[in-house]
Amino acid sequence: MKKTILKAALLLMVLLLTACTKDYKEDDIQKYIREEMGISSFSILEGPVEVEGEDGYTDRMWTVSTDAFALTEDLVFHVYDDHYWGLEWVTNQITDDLAYQKECVLLETFELPEDFRIEEMTDESGRVYRHRIVCGLGRRVDFEKGPIFVKAYREHANSYPTINDTVIYLSFRGSDTGKARDRWLAGNDYSVFFDARMTDEETAEELRKAENRYLMDSISSGALDRMDEYSIAERSAAIQADPYNTEIRRIGEETAAYPGYSYAGWSFYSVPCGTLYRILEMEGYVLTGDWGSFSFVGKDGEVHSFSYDDDRGEIDVEVINAATDLNLDDGTEMETVLIDETLLSMLGTDAETFAAELEAMEGDYYRNLEVSGSAVRIEGKGRELSRLRRTYEKELDALEESLRSYDPWYGLAFNNMNKVYQGLSIRMNSDVPREKLEYIAGKACAYTALCQVLNEGKIYDWTLEVTFDKMVDGDTEEVLKVVLPKDTIDYAKLYKKLR
Image (cartoon, rainbow, N blue to C red; front, side, top):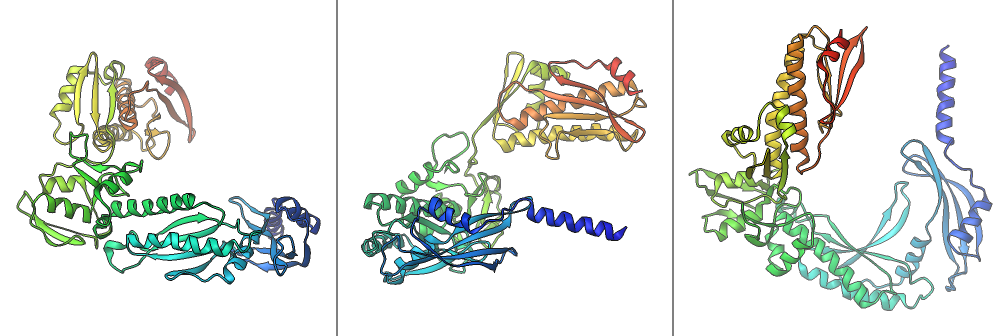
């Protein structure tokens, strides 16, 4: 029996390894060279030769030469039957390294300008497939070396007109200073792709885009020494061109309080350490230390210290506002939700009463609140509305505990692990008294719908799918499904089905 199982397992493994791979013949390789690569004059010098990739798969390689590029010597390249893991099983495809071999010819006699070096890039199999030209990046002036390199490369590559369409990968790499304040930029590549046939205007535009990416990263990380090499206008333009960031503003104000300074690129809710140092400096706070690590006495009389040596090197807006009188807003958009009459009725309240309850809550749960006819309109930031949602999640937890007091299996389940509140399942049997059942189910539906609305952060026609389940012989059985607010729950019918 064990041998049979082992044979079956081995057979399954073989099927998985071979079912989605193709057995390429030399005719397929020749067809690929002619039709996919566009080379009609070539000779296969060797192959197939098995080569072991660093990814653990064995590939096959053909060595090919061609005179199609009219070089002083035939160009030699390789074609691969490349095997790799394709998410579910092993698959394969034909690839080649022609671009790399063209680069080898172009770069072999090219004299690199000062401060540039060549790196070889490898794929998952460990094969070299491209060259990367790297220039160290410590200051803005390093980008000025880009046009110098492009001009020198173009003049050289134009001596090879049949292969100068090969794209070159030029990368400006953030220098690793070893300082914590520079860790967000250390090793970052700001890359430009170009070939010798591109115009000066086209390459200049690509270089400008790479520099803007660097500038935005500098701003997002609060690297003052790098930021200060650019004017406020240049920094503002970079921030405004980036849909993922915004200039720092104060609560209740639409215009930037600090043009040229943005929230941290990794969180709309925080400010980079260096940026906070500059803002406090501008506002007249007495600071000890430098922008990489500093302290000051806050409005509460306590000493507050911030540093890039901390995990994130960024400070939450709420922490800043608690320690200062800056009254900073976060970088997210304002959200608006509407608690309509139907939902208020499910909650057992009306617009005036519900609004009064929200106004009585202590804490930051919204920015604006108004009664709009028979509905309540709430405006706030996502984080504030999330706090409000969590207060109702606690109510849902209490309802679930009430159900579990009858049986550990009883409870509430949402349509996935992340509580997106698009659906609700209520598990119980008829040993829960009907009056209790109606109360728990009604409140659970109301709070779940309310959490859905708050979670969406917009005005829309909400719907909530609700199912009721019971336990039958150890299995879960659905007894009723409704979609609120279109449907109504027939509790008499439900209670009867739960028995």
